Picture (spheres, rainbow, N blue to C red):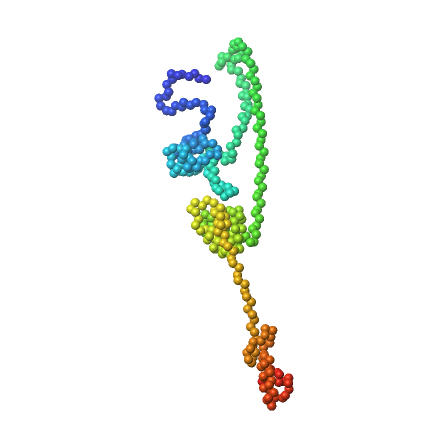
Amino acid sequence: MASVHPNARPPAHGLVHRNVRLTSRYVVISNDLAQHPDLTVPAIGLAVVIQSLPAGISVGIKALALRTKGLSEMRIAAALRELEAAGFLRRTRERQPDGRFVQYTVSYNRPGADPGAVRETPAPRERRQPPAQEPPAAGDGPPTPAEEPPDPAPKRPSPAPSRPSPVPERPSPAPKRPSPAPDPLPEASRPAAALLAGLRAHEPRLLLSERDVRRLAPGVTAWLERGAHPDAVSRTLRADLPPDLANPYGLLAYRLEVLLPPPLPAPPPVRAVPAPRLVCDGCERPFPASVTTPGRCLDCRAEEAATLALDPHVALDPLVALDPHVA
């Protein structure tokens, strides 16, 4: 170790470091970030703040504005975009099973690093012993150990360096099985599924996943079974959408349940119209309902028979006299 000269003067110009060894409350920053030629100073400082925070803490724009002084939310948003473009930051949004969106932020200390989970540093490998050097010639260099005076106290033999235990190899993950294809929709739910999938053609914010369409199809089918026209159902689901719509599935499920129309009233019973009755060809009086053959009534037949009996030109045959078709 070189001797320290307390009276030595520092250089007349340039940077002088007065560092101490940190054992707690520190973060390692790479020069790729600290000396990045394309990043602004606010972006570099914001990256340092993000890398110093513990995992799981919120790093949204409003949360960072509370931690940093002198930076507005607009400037923080611009710095985050710089870090994303340079590869030091990645922000994604994922949908939860309950329909809510959660934003995840991944910070990289070097662009292009492994995006997976941080792995433990493996144990150091055993260093190889350097090859033995030949002793220098006489008169060259320092004296050999044989020429050095013996030490007054014998040195204790240094313990043999312990070999690090081999790091167990992690088993390779089993290949993921492809997810089975969903069952086809029943025939009764296909018109409702087509209506839900077509909502995004009228309103891009109503973009639904295949899973959401399958869960909402029974509600739309109930509307169609109650006599609602498909165009009316589509207009009702698209009407008066909130400007900050973040969960289209929850909104549509609420409207399908709350705005369900009542069933149509039953049509009135149709009364049977009685069949028209036949009337007498002579006096035009109606016949009974059991009579289905047109003709003359009994009174008209008797009167006609009496008239024919008085006619001397007609034979006095009782069958001919009673025939209604004889003129």
